[in-house]
Length: 164
Image (tube, rainbow, N blue to C red; front, side, top):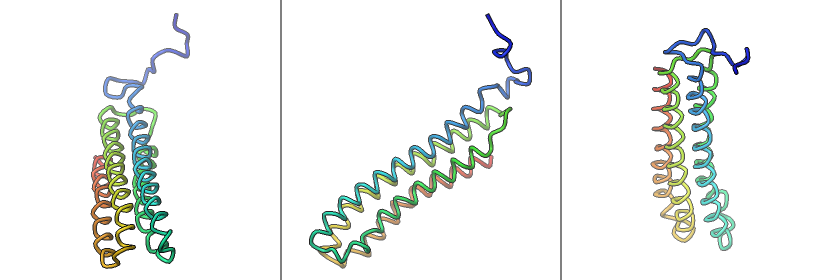
């Protein structure tokens, strides 16, 4: 028994089904959830290293905050893509555009999660090592940059998919 409010949208077509926007929404959710998951892990793991290092070298705390800041930037990548995808939503949405936007969200989200994990592991070990041997600091920063750029690659792919 169908009620009047459960009828199929007469404007929906095969190329623009009523459910196509769902894929864009899932892309937006994937972008923010996975990238913030990576950023949270990177922040927490780096903070463990900073806390351990600060017991003997409290003067190095501010210098050691760099991995935490870099992990936070990963979440911003996901936020940007999520806002872009959400802003593109309209009532009638082409299926191919929904799939492209799902891919864009997964691209930035999963690469952000991987980058956040890398930043956390490198930040934890690197902060402790740099406290014991200050000459390691420049190497630590370079490794963190290489970890951060993994998230940037995902952002670039996501923006490319979004503009298709």
